[in-house]
Length: 638
Image 1 (cartoon, rainbow, N blue to C red):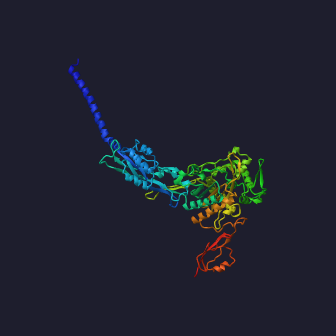
Image 2 (tube, helix red, strand yellow):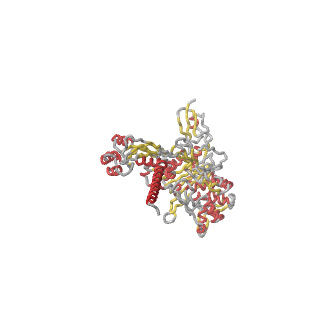
Image 3 (cartoon, rainbow, N blue to C red):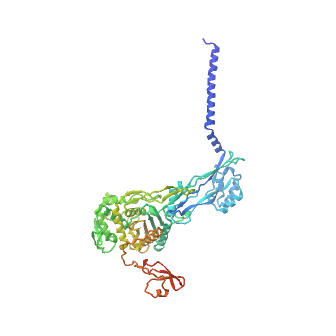
């Protein structure tokens, strides 16, 4: 039997064990809090007793391929409130409302929010320097004028649809500004200060500054000069033909780099709020779908040549129409072209000839090549809003649908798809992914941190077939329907397109066409492909008359800008009615002005300077120009 002392000792021992366990647990917890969580808890305590004023990073620039600024940020002041530090909200709201031109109640609601800090939006964002100085002069507690930034577009409307625009918080809202928003915007910084529970600054507290990290600069494939040439010609087309819209794209067929791209109507990115949203939401070169017309014949030609279904020296008779499935499909030329070779079928853009090629291929094979060339799917260009287009399903294609598809009617494509497809047809058969981003550049070091490489998606035709396509399309420009795109000294290939538009009820609109031309140069080694489409031009509506001259001007200026040398082995142009004859400029340097005036030279003269002798001239002698072109002569006395 245990004694009472033994029981007491046992109980005391148990109590000691429990007490020791509790003590050790407390020691362990305190050690964990002090040694392991101490730093974290200290940071949390500092956060609870501190307030942050954010510092916006500089948004990255967007540059052209040669480093020219297309858009960048400029400094501008904005107003921020720290509600806990506002002493007299009513008076503060009244003072700010008078300067900012905002409703007093709206300002009051913002400066009394339960928040660490509040931007006074939108009236207090990106204000003028004059308003900023007035607010600073008031010295209102809890109100700070901070450095902010806004986007600046030095060329106003240039490349507007591609660049896009930013919102009031410098966030990307459209175009490349939206696509690459995260990389352009950077990381915010802050100024932190100590405060009490009410958010009031503590005397003697320490401030700390975390610098913002600026966004990367984006270098584009766009060439500013080529872009300006394109937009100049589009503006002239709008003024001359008063169309519904105009679309233009220039691309390198070797890399898929977009050298220039635009559409009309246009807008100013820094004034997008004043623009109809339809204008800036519809990026027509990648969004608009329509029947391509005869520019699509390039695909039919390439497929027939690749499958060895035709020889260009082979003969074909065109009576002016072809009967298919009970329907009569007519050639654009009344009475037809008569007997011709298939090269002349291409030169003349003869519909019955291309119907014949479509039938030789068959619907399965033709549709196979159409898809190989990228139609019916997105090209992958780095822009939002790209459309796919619409193709016939082979099982739903009858003889008439096969025939019309062969010459570009009954299918729906986008302008960018056509440029990519034709580039593949003439660059050796490589289907490329088009792109606008060329490189990412560190804004501090100006070093390239990432470079975008060309991407070949598929080999659609052989080098040999591509060579034949190039030669055929060069012949179209020298001798056929593309004659108005001919540039003396440069080998240019191309194809016209005139497509009737489809109305809301599915029927074709009378007298309403999209006229287009796609050209490339030099034809033996293409460096640039240019596509222009004019929607419903007033007056004459033929691609060879309206769009081809526009492409010629863009190509001519672009080739000179790119310093592409001229070729000597150009196919001689074939004179045609309504197309100016090319004549050679004589050498007038050293001649007497009066003698030149009375000579047989049939050139208008533009005289610059004074004197009797010609010291210089433009164009230089030996240049071929259109008959009737003026020669500028510079006079002086020796």
